[in-house]
Image 1 (spheres, helix red, strand yellow):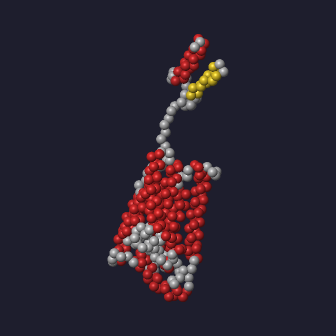
Image 2 (tube, rainbow, N blue to C red):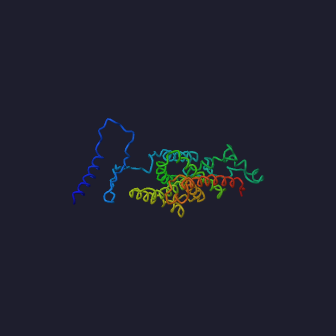
Image 3 (cartoon, helix red, strand yellow):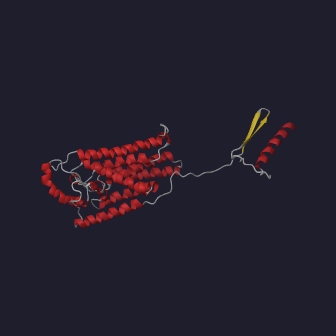
Length: 326
């Protein structure tokens, strides 16, 4: 290497080293050197650049602080207490439809007036005694109370297992308040659909709400596979789905609680609301949101309109649709 070349490299090296020394001066400057400041040197037409970088490692958590599944535990305990009360009211271990109606099960003749006057004159006195006089014949609370009642121990246990599994996961992530509202919406939707499709049957159970939880959980975990980066977390999400999906598949084709009474309409209503709530609450992957301007907010807005529209239209159809005992 020539003397000139050595001199130039020495000058460059001294410049690099001087930039790393702490200056000792009595004068203070208001101008701060940015962490990614650079020095550029020209040498025979070539450019030599050094970036004075400060390496930083940042750990970002995609999920917020975990919440305790208070509502999930509370609902499970309340469901158990209600079943015990139903056995006390029944005074036996075999629950009948009269007990379900008495305790607040879904029964449309208690929820709106019979369409024809002749039937009202004939049946109203008996229905008033059977349904209780409170708010008869517009006992709208029966859209909600059936989700806390069950037809027996196996029915309760079957719902509690998957309610605890999906519920604890979702409540830990989204918080007790959001989860509680979602759960009520799922059960409400399931009972509306059951009342529309099967108006003459008595229905109890949290299956509509559980189906909403299952679909919410499946969609949430599926989308998280695309939004999280850690391979271990992706595997965990996949394993969770393997636990949740079999219940849905079996309950479509089999009587999983051996009750002999499957309300598929309630399942469908809960599942539909679970899908809409998941679209509204879940973090959407970038390949979905980037297709339209402000994609995440637009998706949330569409989901919210669909939720409100579904309930408005369903309730309107419910009260317009004729109901008769025969």
